[in-house]
Image 1 (cartoon, one colour):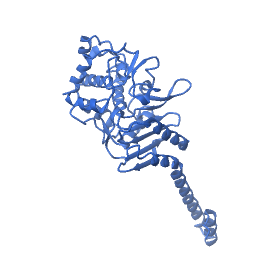
Image 2 (tube, rainbow, N blue to C red; image 1 turned 120 degrees about the vertical axis):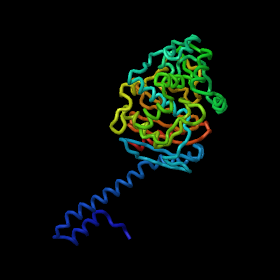
Image 3 (cartoon, rainbow, N blue to C red; image 1 turned 45 degrees about the vertical axis):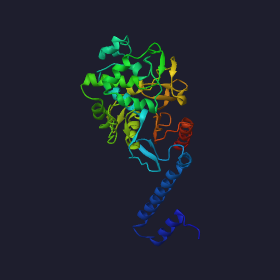
Image 4 (cartoon, helix red, strand yellow; image 1 turned 30 degrees about the horizontal axis):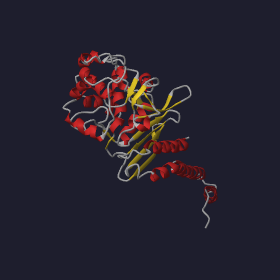
Length: 360
């Protein structure tokens, strides 16, 4: 039997109820129902290629995956594979850097600190070691010149010996310099952890409290915390969910605004996205980020012909990958826990391309 078309349904209803006052209402209702059904099917099929690609990569992504895409402040795509959902909390490693940079930005907006302020102004120990002139901006962009090293599971375990953020930052002051501040790029935890400590000094509050008050509560990130271990790690210690982090990404995408409230000024959001590494010598960068530039707490994955940053991200060691696309005007996150590094960036690039094709 051939399926009844929307037109035939309407025609039949009109014939039956011809001459009645209900005719017009019934026609409108059936058409609206048909339109709603059509839109639902369209929405389901729009991201079919993304779903297929995600399933094909499920194993290499770690097995458990939650992916969200948000456009116009609405989640337009959600896919859960394995045991993860949008509310599954997971360690997000260096995705934390974007959160910390945003927290620092709130202090910049208030005028309590300036990007050009020096470390010596707040932390005299850096002046004692001849590093007092390093700026907050240079710390936020990993261009302080202080010797850093690759972040590994071993280095994360060694960090457990540290008694406090204050103790850790004081040890940074004694490290060797690998280049002139602002002229070399060395990715790591030194810069943002140092500025995180400055926030504690000027506010007389601990880092977790500051994050909770200024970022987590306003952005309704109810399951996000830096209380993961004995000592707070502003550069890599957060635990979050895909839903929570998406709220953060929506704020960044909306130039600092979330649910009608300005969390960070549009001017400072723009400053965060400017490249600080155009003319720097790369001392250390993760292997899969060699072609990328860096702003404040975030990688610049793509720039337009005018040099403006248009795709930004802050991926983590364990595989979670958040990003915003200013051209296609959407935010995305792939929440995973995966220690497999091979082809990680290539896989995420393919997924981003599939999303771009679907979201037009």
